[in-house]
Length: 138
Image 1 (cartoon, one colour):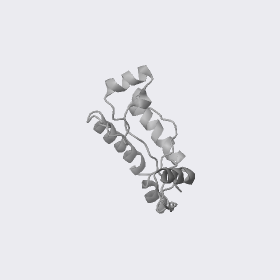
Image 2: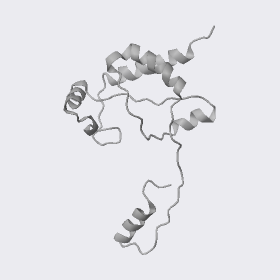
Image 3: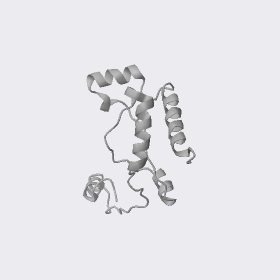
Image 4: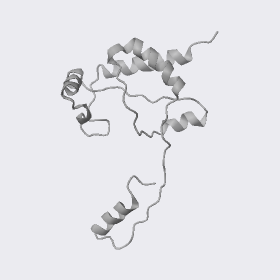
């Protein structure tokens, strides 16, 4: 399935002077990434305790990542989360102005996460996740 309706692709080809109708076929796709709710719940409480007001819950997105294939192949639950990478003063200014959506994201050529606190936050979050799920059960 294409992200664009076939009619748009066909119209663009026609407008560009293509002499033949385009052949459109899906050669690869990934499933929707749907977080495991029990795992989200376990992480959320610990993340809230540790990150406090720095934890920002985002709206659901239509993300599709191939990492979910690895988990589902072995029947493992998974959660996809992201780390903020914007310099805190720039983030705070964008929040105050209501322009957070205009900040460059990871698909933008202008995306340039700051090293700190991005690395520290990522390491802390991954460590918390590991400690939650790798602890010994009595």
